[in-house]
Image (cartoon, rainbow, N blue to C red):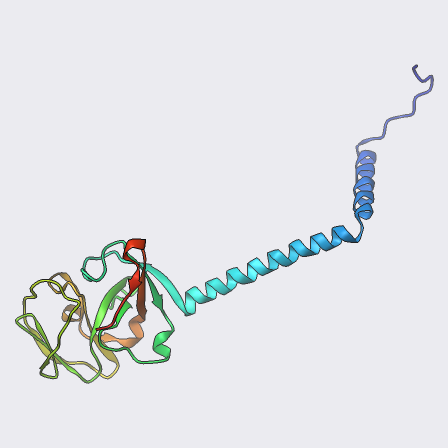
Length: 206
């Protein structure tokens, strides 16, 4: 049955007002339980944000992952190995002979290299017929593979520096090319290989 005198339909503004009133009524009907749920979601989001910021802080100041791109550390490290580097450890102790380190390349500091610490401040480093000598004494290097060729030095490592070389001595640009490395160019110590899984292991010193 049709109405003889229909009421005018509400305009767009009226419809928006009606929708707003319904939404308010619905939220009010949900009561304290809805507010608790909303607060719980907020707390979860806040926790995730804090965790993300802490992770970034750790990456910047404590540890960082690096991918090996060079052949100069074979057989210890292979291209595409991923290593975890401690950026904090040298605030607790000095670099030691045998440490595998990530460094900023002295000739182009925006590039990262990975090498092994061979000589410490004040030591005299020399290579004769591929054999490493420190202060005139031969050093056993169990991490090398294959015959090493060439002579170098001797040179004395300055007080603020270390002498670094790659384990792949015949194919490594290292302190023999760019000289002793200033310690402020050390990013940190590579402590383990974490990828690929079949190569995961700690990186020993000597």
